[in-house]
Length: 492
Image 1 (cartoon, rainbow, N blue to C red):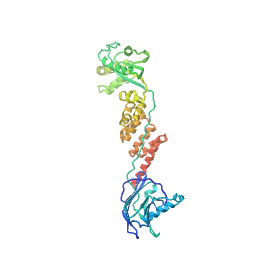
Image 2: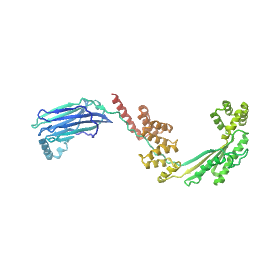
Image 3: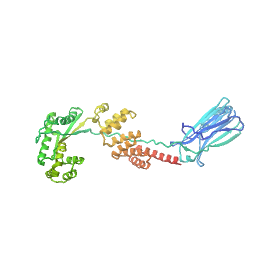
């Protein structure tokens, strides 16, 4: 009685391990074994060979059984057998199975292949089995037991050894899993901000819309406000205005000038858009010494170090200004007055507003025209609606979301995840290194190190992510262990 072993079929290429004819003393036919392999492949041991059966391979009343056996000398696995029946024996077996009891049949283990051989038959049997790979199999060999039962009950038993040990076909290719997270739903607070360099007549604070650069500078603010004020999807929450003056007169004078000029802009906008006073927040800086310091630092002006020393001295503002006017006969001060001070006289503005939420149908259209009005979760849902294999999905996750949420860890990690799947590891790493260190980031970074062969670093990050509950990290740890084992086998 043959024993039953669990196995799954495996289709693979055939490597020639041996070729030979198996003869019997009492009959003229033969059976040829050819084309076999004994290969570890992706955690499975693939065993295969081909048996060519001659039409006279088995006497009419005889039976031939081939039983493969895998062993390393200690552990033995007997594989499903092959049975070849002569014509008379085949008829006898059919009658016997017909009259057998159900209880007997419940213990009967049918062969892997059963062939009824006659003079008109010439068969080739492709014997292929895939076993779960176990460590002991690395030193195992495959044997083939050949049993012939003749017409008068006489039998012969032969054993053929395949001399090849198990080979590793190719380096194991890891199948990592990246982590993508659905963004959290957030209130869509938005802001638009910029600077306007308004020109005023000397010592005056009234805004003249047609004076010098004012048409272009006022247009900046008007364009920003128009996009907010006339959009029914937007609720205006506040407007912040901050005025700056340059250090070219007594500080008290500049303080009054900066305050009055920012107030003038507030009045201009209130009249133009009918805004209430409560919508505005106003502040001013009399003399923008920080801005002057930055401009000087970025310049190549003469006496640069001396100018910076005066700016950083911490002295009274008017004292600093007087010292700058005296430095080197006033040459550096004249240059700053001409080239830098105009850039310090400005109004900075920030427009705060709230955007309503959109359903999926609306979001699919909004993302084409005003993606800035969508939340990250709305963009993410649109991407998922297109499907993971679509170009729209990849473009939204990799390009659109990081553009509008460039500091968000989920946005950066999700974009990196798709880049990892595209094998764009360097770009993915740059995104992940910018992101806050979260379990999802650890897993995705771990995948990069795994794919690039830094197993120690990969193990550290994946272990952290798995401990934090990232399921993909647990899978990746298993892949890491498989890769390490595979590398050892290849080296061996």
